[in-house]
Length: 170
Image 1 (tube, helix red, strand yellow):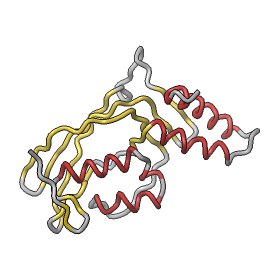
Image 2: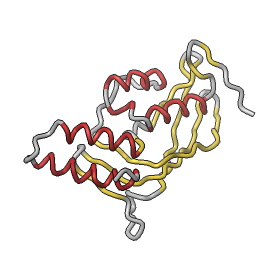
Image 3: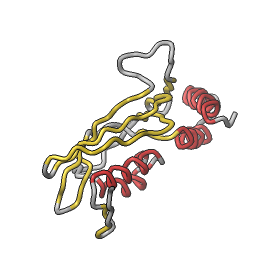
């Protein structure tokens, strides 16, 4: 049984902190500086990194924590459907030809540490892992703001079409 208490708005268990971090990430909080303001307090990172790529996931599963003193490791398994690079390149997961670096299930061992009595995500600092719907909304906004005859516009349109198909909104 996991007991959760909130002190000063901060969850007191490594699993609770990581769950908050993962939910914000899945909902796109790390895609812009305003959203990252919500994520940053959950980490011990010195600055807010910028990302030009995102892993698109259907969901994730959080494993049990492994505690060692002031450190915890928790493995998260993501259900990956694709990858967006630079907001203009889409790579869908292909079940028939998985590569060593791009698989349908990716396991990430997150490390958390205690800082001043609160658990914080320490690493790894991997790129955002966002939902299909968040990726679609983001790419639709980029598409709407692009010039219709540009190469960028064509790239955005291809990504939007692929994401609409994945989300069932086609």
